[in-house]
Length: 74
Image 1: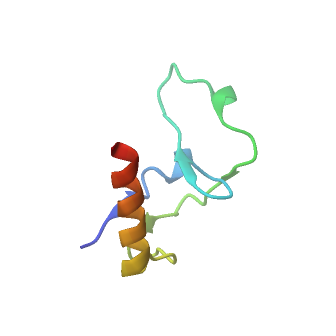
Image 2 (image 1 turned 30 degrees about the horizontal axis):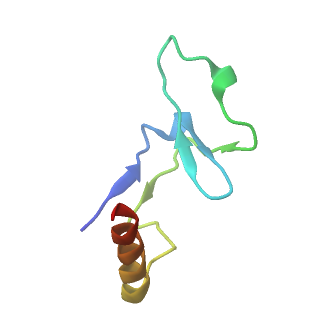
């Protein structure tokens, strides 16, 4: 399975933060002043997908996350 989470087309609107990326809207009504401080704009050729991902969950980690989510839903 291959997943693209940030496409090249989204790169001009994407900022990298310590623990995540944010793709900001590109509508005429949206103000750039709403960009959260502390982020760095990614390169215009940036792409983030399952082929470029460097962090993977082990089967055990995935089970732990799913158990936690299930318990929170109860």
